[in-house]
Image (cartoon, rainbow, N blue to C red; front, side, top):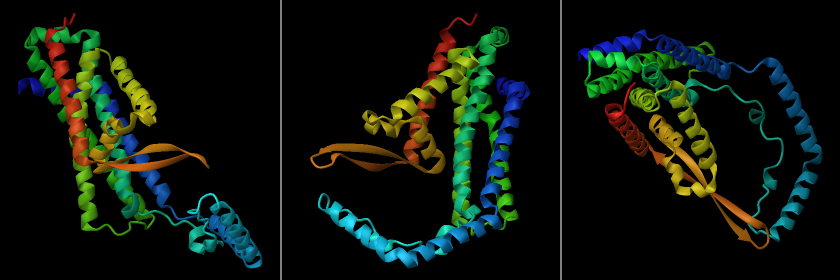
Amino acid sequence: MRLLRVELLRFRSRALIRWGAAGAVLIGLLFVFGAYQSSAPVPQAEIDAARADYDEAVADWEENGAEYTAECEEEEAAEKENDPTVDFGCEDGGPGEWSDWIGGTSSFSDVGLELVDVAGVVYLMVALVLGVTFSAAEMSTGAISSWLTFEPRRRRVYWSKLAAAAIGVLPIVAVALGVVVGGAWLAFTLNDAQGSMTTGAWAGLAWVLARTLLGAAAFAALGVALGVLTRSTAGALGLVFAWLVVVEMIFGTMEFFGGLKRFLLAVNTQAWVSGRATYYTETCVASDDRGIDCTYAEHVVPMTQGGLVLAVLVVVVCVTAAVTFRRRDIA
């Protein structure tokens, strides 16, 4: 416990951690600004311009609507010779209703949970970076060698650092999430766009916040382990960046990846924070008359799988770093 208290003090005193905490709050303020922008009423000039366009479209449809419909039905009939399932929706033509032309503003009840979902994933990445900077700096400068002269039991030193990072990021992420939720609610309130938040909606929001805090602790521990393994802040963050670009963004979008997409880090992180995540697979077959036909299937990754995949990742990396730290020459 004395080691843990010392490591918590060192975590709180590190300049990069303080800058990271300030950055987390700044990110929260950016989310609040976006919430205010999305809930602001549509300017009257835009309403007037949209109304003029709508009136012009209505007048054109009243004059030429029958001709447009006939042309549509003719093209549809020609296309049905190749594909009987074609439906151009000719009967649904026309300018539609005025409400379809002028979009309404969003409300907190509509987008609040989605906003917190996105912020939660961002703050998991912030926790990972804070964990990396906490351990990698000591490794790269050799300060860990001096520390081991005071406490030579490496296992205790390593696990106390992991615990300190996991605990230390909690108030940072909690305050940042408080800024996002409280600030977004205030922004929507100022624009009179709170919507109708039910008890169930608030409960769902609370669960997202709880899972984000738990995930932040795990990602901070993962960051410490990566810092120990690479012994460099740039190396650890470069490894993370390479994984995200090469595996998640390049290979993860290729169809040969197939069913392995459900194990991507981004998908499972989203599933854990949001409660579920979706991804799509494409299946293409040769067609005699149309060349290639492709169909898309939606797949759902539940929260349970997301949590298990992240837990396995964190445990494997942390244990590997523990073994490496015990056996590797520090100097």
